[in-house]
Image 1: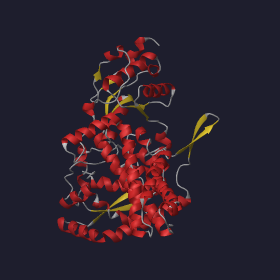
Image 2: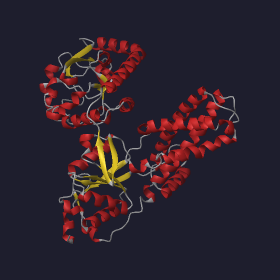
Image 3: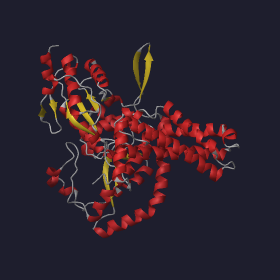
Image 4: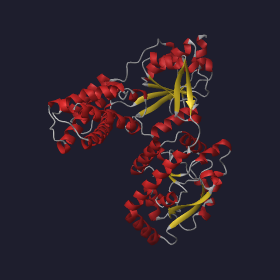
Length: 508
């Protein structure tokens, strides 16, 4: 490949304008990480001199090492704290100096499980995502402590203490790791990313990072006009210059095709330059992330599970919906009564609003909501269509003039959705699932995209917790991947994130 081939690489800054690449004629420089001036935000609650010292230490360690050390310290302290509290409340044996032995045991156990290295590979650092592993490891820690009890604690532990230790370890470690990640994010600089791929995909990745509130930003994108520009020496040297000049921390590779010819070289050059690398595989947009990797005599194969839910999975999902819904209805019954009274007093019309939606297997049903608009809202829709911000196929208006005073509060807090618990009890909806579309929106979903109807629609779902509006086609794709990857744990995570989304006033 000749040096002129490098001219096919064009760098764009976030506003889409081209940036000069005169730097590609300079020698390749390996970046040494962010400068001390970019070491991060002040630590909350620390005096300025102490905050400066903490930031200096954080910069010296680097973001990855800082995350690992804070997580390790949090795990060790949480384990000792849980053990001391449980033994003090339930144990006949009193904790002694040997309790400290569980600190290195915890760190070693978590290290073997890979819980200190995964953050360095990910853009999002979520304790909720690793909760199943934490629960398993907490049970193992409780069991080991029970076995070693006569030697470490001077007395045996019973079944009640074992259960309490399990739950105590899990709660303490979960809270500790969450706090450690918050502190690490405060002390670390914002991660600077370069997207290698077309401009449209780079813009979408930038929007996703903002919506997810990740401490990372796309500082530039690098479209590749020719696949050959990925592979020759001049192209890779140009990427090295960009990494050095922009002080990048991560390359995000978003190829427009599944051809891995140049992707492998990009990954290698990213690792050689000392930056983190993330790849957006187009294949997983279709099959989802629930795949099983196997080694076939040196060849890696990915096994994709069958689409949809088995009969037993449907039973488990329905039982979970009924249990959680009855608990919720009993807990918030007074709130439902107060909201109904407020809707009645605010404007004329019924308390509940019914609308025909398309449910599982294309069957129509009436969805319930607290009425948040004036009675003739549907008649005014055509006159307001130019204010639609949801893109093709959906209809959504910011500051909709048809919304009542009480309705505005209900929508901001998502309380208008609560009557859909009745739909869940009737079996027409699930707590979590694909969005139930109105009839005219559903008519635009064609072909294999209609497989999203394989599951019962939900009160909340994956795209609702993203904190951003998505066009119809992307919403359909997100729902498809949810169906392809369904698990009970996924539903639990989405419910927790829905609560967090509402508390952040994500619908404003």
